[in-house]
Image (cartoon, rainbow, N blue to C red; front, side):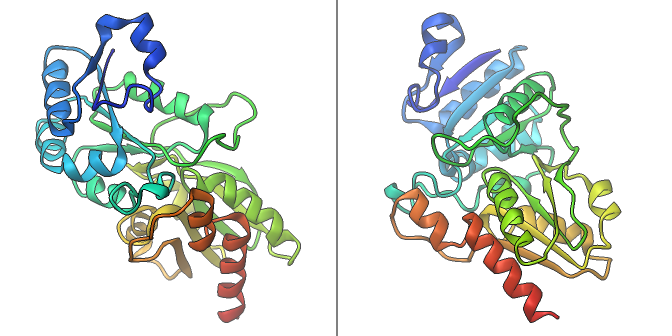
Length: 288
C-alpha cells in the first residue's frame, strides 16, 4: 500500500504516516491530475495506491484521469475525496463538493464508498485496500465527527446496514447524514412517526436486494450531503423506477451555496436533524 496526495499531507491526516513510512508516501504537489497519473503508474506496477485530495478536485478537476485510468483501464486506485459536501463551506463554491457522486457514479467500473463515521471510514479503507477495484471513498462531515457505530460490526462493500427499525417510513442515509437521520428519527417518534434508518455506505454498487425487499413502507426517503441530482437519491430512484412507491429525496437543492460555516450551511439546507425531521413531517402531512 502506498499513498499520494496533492499537497494535502496534513489535511489528509497523512503526516504521521509520512514520518513512519516515508518510502510509501508521495506528495505530488498542487497537481491533482498528475497525482492520478502517478497513482495509475503505481497501480500498474502492483502497488495499492491511495490518492487523496479535496472531493471537488478529485471528481471534477481530475474527471478525465478518473475516467481513463480508473474507469476505462480499471486500475485499482483508491481515490479519497476529502471534505465532501459542505464541510469546507467557508471556502465557497469552488471547494464545496455537491456533484462528486453524480460525476463519478456515471463512470463505469468504479466503486463508491460513503462512510458514516470514523469507525466506518476505517472499515471502508481496509475493505478497499483488499480489492483490485477502482474505488472512490467519499468523506463528509466536520470535526469532531459524530459517532454512529459504538461497537465493532461486520462491514461488506455493497451491503446496506439497518441501524433502527420502524414501521411507518424508511430513511436511507449516507455519510454524515446517517447520524443526523438517526437523530431525526428520534424527533419523529415524538410525532408518532416510526422510522427505519439504513446506512447506505456503498452507493455503487448499491444494495438493490435490500431496497427492493423494503418497498412496502408508506413513505421512502433518502438523505445525503450532496445535490438531489445524481447522488444517493437518484441511485435509489433508478432501483425503484419500476415500482409504485412514495419516494422522496432530501439533499442540497440544484444550486450553489454561498460561503459560510459548515453548521450554518447544514441547517440552511435543512440537513440537520431538526431540518430532516421537519421535511419528512411536511411531506407526510401533505400526502395524507
